[in-house]
Length: 303
Image 1: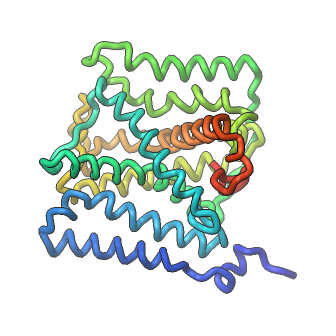
Image 2: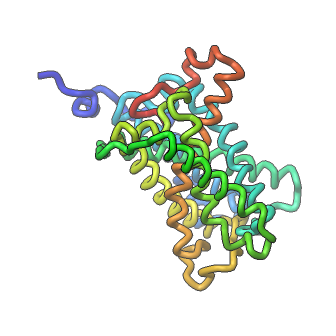
């Protein structure tokens, strides 16, 4: 009997060259941080390490599954980079009012600071999605009861999401600082009902309605893993973020108050919802994108 690609992958799919490059980048960054005081690496340690991580994890997915975000259609990966930057700015905008984190140890030069911001922000969405891809490539599969979504429930989801997205911005800053947790949840119920049966990729809600929970679990688990990696690398970097929100400051793991790690789980779901919304907008503006290799197809690798 013929073997599946996953079963025969060890023979059919060699580890691609960009994976070795990614591992070399990470090794150089780690050794450089330990053995040198090279200022550019101290400033850009976190995005440097994430760049190596993205290349090596994508290569491992390619090794296990035969396809990845960089192969055979690198445009899918490249499109994700500017979208990641643009979508993360939504949360930076919230932070201007809520003041939950601040950046310290940044270069004095504005262009160098902007380079650090941009380089860091473009890695966020790829990190979440590639980590989820890797978990699925290792065989993660979760099915269960379908989520029943009536029109009334869809309206309630949307209303709840709208309230959670709006309330933190409407409150005085000293009170709003306590509400950032709901921002990490708001965009899933706000966006998913609107995109149901409309987005060019499978949405999380569409999958749940079919009883397919794999992407929920892979993204949530991947978000938590990425959170631990983000915070550990952040501790080593000269240019880093610190959390200043007025809760749990005595319960820190790295710079993050311990309960805050739970926020990485729904944030990964939000990342998928915001990405699907971005694709829906791009298809509306340029309908031809729907039939190009730039947009991922629905299926195990879709968002």
